[in-house]
Length: 113
Length: 115
Image (cartoon, rainbow over all chains, first blue to last red; front, side, top):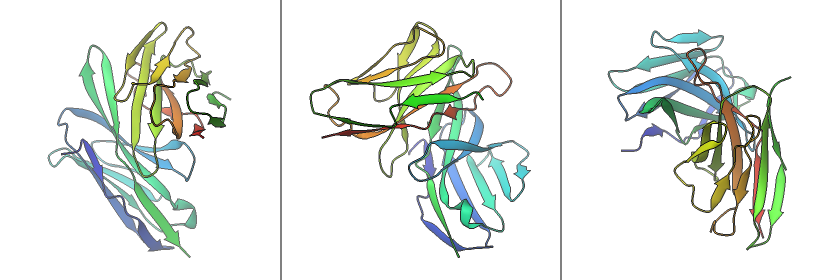
């Protein structure tokens, strides 16, 4: 089983739609979780951290389910500018004061006019 | 403004040549990382450094070398031993410690093409 798995998509949705992505992780000792956004041929940028109780930032909502080992990202009222690849990132303690970040391969979203 | 600067943005290399990619940060971050990204693939860790004068191999270190002589700088050398070096290279850094400890900040990347 891959450490961090995402549906690669693409998800093609009309403007104004609601879309959700899931990400599963295999390391039960994972401690922190993030969603990054990556535009074509650009660097990833932090979209939001994912907190245990779930968190919202405008149109974006992130959820964590530790029991089932997945995180989700919900985007409401999709905009054309939301078109990007969304990377799931999982952080786990790897010993000796070090943390290891593992990236999913990303889910591609295209918002269509 | 603080950030991470990678250079060059685009680089072309002939087979058999070594090239060095620069990464400089003024965020006062302790830890720095080099990742490689291939089309349709996730980020793969090449090397990382938690502190000056120390660095560790990541998952795909073969054919690469790094140094960390200064906190601000973490250059990556792609050697001729790297069999498939054409890729998008991303440098990143993060603070260590309990507050915002694990958020990575990326540079804009260097795109290397071997001719």
